[in-house]
Image 1: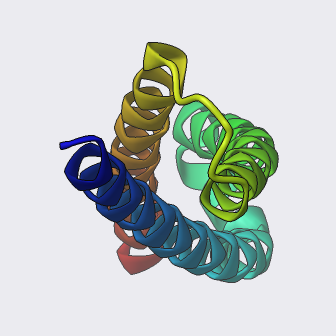
Image 2: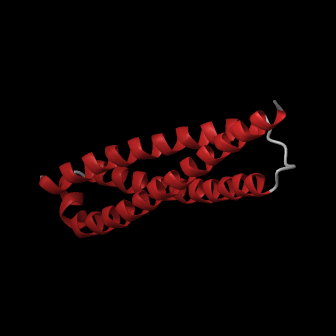
Length: 130
């Protein structure tokens, strides 16, 4: 019975590890989008600021906040992935509830960033289309 529990735990840790890899991929996508948004924003800034200065400032601020959040979450996700790797390699490591809680929190933050990205994209494209 102990062997089955260890195998099940190993499978669950591998699933967490793969999920972590997917998050890194999503963060890389967000970083690429952010670079695109920055370029688009810079190209349209002069024209847009004359029409809707408050909106332009809000979009600029949102882009700055998004960039900081992406960087912080990327560092946390990479650290979390290394921890999972260590646990997978060392069978004597103990897994605590904190690992699962941190995993859930990272997943939530990724989803919030994706939502923020969509919102910024919508506002930025609206600004450009005007």
